[in-house]
Length: 199
Image (cartoon, rainbow, N blue to C red; front, side, top):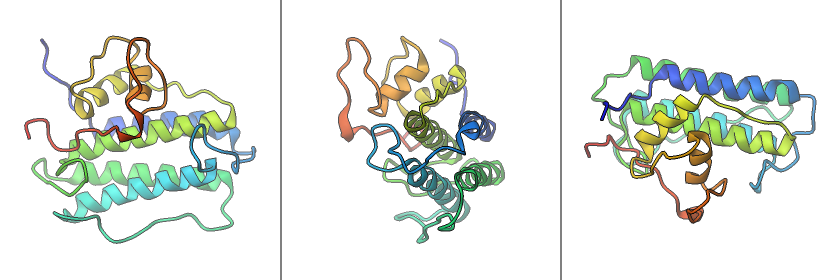
């Protein structure tokens, strides 16, 4: 069996680019509509994505051991959909830059385990891809991310999940966004493995 390939800052940049490319043509649509099956609108979901990615950057930067860094990031109230998407993109690229500068042995709090830089890169990829999927669904467009990226993210965050179908479909299933034949939906109790896999 070949060694697992790590999830990197480049992968996060790839996830961000895939989502921005998919959503950019729809910035003139109504982003107040619900984002897929979420109870949030597309605008709120994109804003949440920006906040989460900046939060992860803060975690890596100062490495708190028992809590999140105490801040909340939001777009300005009058920001357009294009500017909200820009906010989410900027947050993803900031997180990627912080990951590149972090020591490999850095560890910081996350509810799913004390995460390393690779863990935050993988979590950032999932946040970006699944919330991009939510927004795309609300806007009636398709998100088609790189399957190799999805596979490596699954191997890092969902190591017990067999990758025996399209990795993108499995990632959507693992985050309770899609059905897979022969598998029960995980429901809203799904969790990933944030800590390094040897922990």
